[in-house]
Image 1 (tube, one colour):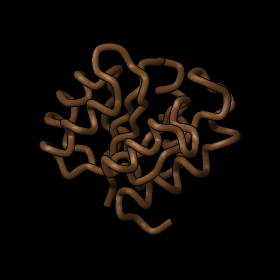
Image 2 (cartoon, rainbow, N blue to C red):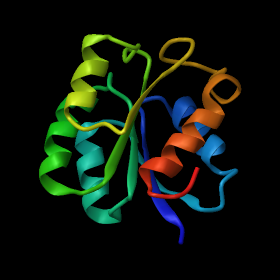
Image 3 (cartoon, rainbow, N blue to C red):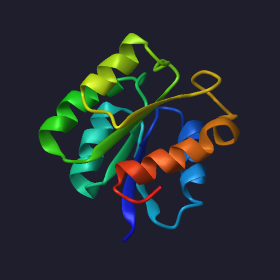
Length: 135
C-alpha cells in the first residue's frame, strides 16, 4: 500500500530535491507540498498524508508551531528536515519533545544541494519507518 507524503520547505529547490529523493521508492508517494506552516495545516486537512517532511525555519509559521497544531488535528507522523535542527540543538530537542519521528539535519545549510548524496538514503529509510513500512 502506497503511503502519502507531504513535503514542506520554503525553498522550491529543497522541495524539489526531497521529492526527487523520495521518488525512488514506489511505496512512498509525494501527494503535495507546502511553503510554510500555515499552508501545511491546510494541505494536511485536504490530503491527509501519512508522513510530513517538515522544515523548521519558514516564514509565516515555523515548523515548531506547525507541529504543535498538527498534533491537535492529525495522526500524521512528522520527520524534521532542517538546517537549524543539528543534533542537540534547542530546535531538535523541541521537535523530538513534540513527537518528531526523527530529526534530519541538512548537511550544508538551508540550501543543501548535496542533500541527496549525503542524506538521501536516510530520508527514504526514515520516511518508510515513519509510514509504518519495513526499512
